[in-house]
Length: 466
Image (cartoon, rainbow, N blue to C red; front, side):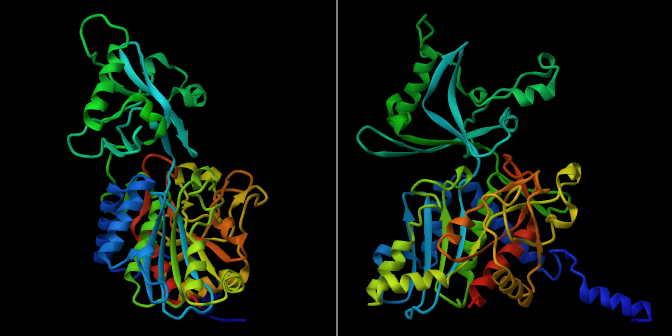
């Protein structure tokens, strides 16, 4: 046994696992530059469609082309935009051997959608009926400036893009809350809020000052028709999303954090996009994936339950005269996936719902989440120890600051990611992403250092996983 205090200190250093600050040895100038680029990107990419569009612009600026236009026999730097809101990015050498390295994120976020027949008039106001999407706290969406973003498909099939509330000078929209003078029981009110109370105020002026039924609604419809050429029936074939109208902002006297709508999970998508663009070397064929519909279970043609990108892997194998089915199965079984999603950071104001020893902390680096699910790991993908060990070694070898985490106490928290949809195919998969405060709120919070460490983690995975 050691005899000196210094010996015990060294033993403690060698044997114990302690979290480190994510700011250690970081170039703060690079962190700030990266954060500013992220803030600008997020201000333009608040929905899955606009995020995918901005990603394509950046890809094309860096020499990537639509995969439909490249020679699949040669080295591939290409992308595939699927149905406007799901994206696959391919970077593959001419020689295709072994499995793939995949980083997969989702680019949908909790929000509020317009119903198919939304517009109505009531009590000298024009309002729109909505249907919330994903897990939100409804009261957080009252009395904040909101924008309407999406597409409307007209009766002639023409697609019209809508974005109102995000540009300087735009009007914004709002859902009004009840004043405290008429609502003495605040707790009761929060629990009593229903989805049908999320009514968006969109106008209050009549088309004529003569008495006429529906004059206010008609004025709004005429304004929409004048600007966009749409009629009320066109809204049936639309995807119009209600998102916060405010911009991402730096937080704190030290500007060490970023507040924004949609960190979950666009922050991981952005970090992986930058990682593949900045990677000078890839250890294996690499695919970066952005999915839709995660916040409602990942179902549907643009969710992770539909692996739309796999058909392109088969097309590449066929183009290279590789026996498709057998080779494809071997490749998939040898594929490594980082399911890049966020976790919940410890909040000192709400300590009771966290288990302090196994929760991530803001500013302690990228988070490894071995399993998700709820209660007894229900609905979880639980990564095998061997794969976790390989990822841990890569992060350590590249001096990436990381931590582990669960989403709250057992029987209190829990959640899911897209990891299980890859695990079902036999791929190795692990959740890796930053921790957030205020997850699923209209203004989530992340540490700039954690954002940058996430980017470094993805760079290391692309470069070193074999």
